[in-house]
Length: 152
Ligand code: HEC
View 1 (cartoon, rainbow, N blue to C red):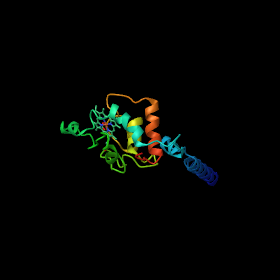
View 2 (cartoon, helix red, strand yellow; view 1 turned 45 degrees about the vertical axis):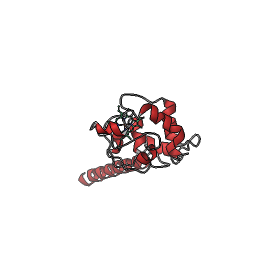
View 3 (cartoon, rainbow, N blue to C red; view 1 turned 30 degrees about the vertical axis):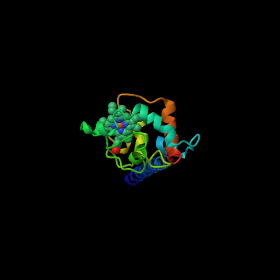
View 4 (cartoon, rainbow, N blue to C red; view 1 turned 120 degrees about the horizontal axis):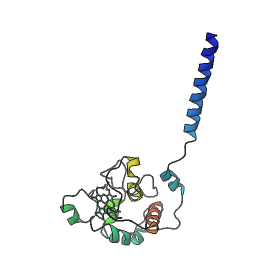
């Protein structure tokens, strides 16, 4: 009897291992990975995105905003300075860069605006702090990143 039971529990363990192993292999890609597979609906430039930053972000993300001692990530989003603050610049809150041209899943800005920053080791609040972006504004910024973050 004993060898049989042993064989039974062995095959049970093997099938559990196989099931777990296989289900891991077919795991769903994350939302950001799926988003990366998308092409932008059209090519979007920073020139088009800047008005969104100017309306929703620069009240805080400006040089004097940082003088208040609030840790704004040393990020200035004023016209003419946003590219230098965002593109290929390391985030201070996460291991990612703020904008990785062409990739949403590697861009911390994407997670901050969609509220999913905790999934990539980020901290703090969803941006814009104290406000919201319209779905159209969000889509435009996503398309800008997917377009390769061109200036114009
Ligand atoms: C009311 C003030 C305020 C507004 C408005 C605001 N932010 Fe912020 N932002 C902060 C503060 C404070 C932090 C740091 C704490 C946190 O992440 O919650 C921050 C952090 C960030 C970071 C992380 C920087 C890093 O290096 O990790 C990004 C990216 C960011 N903001 C983008 C934006 C964008 C884009 C907008 C506009 C759509 C915006 N913020 C609007 C106050 C603001």
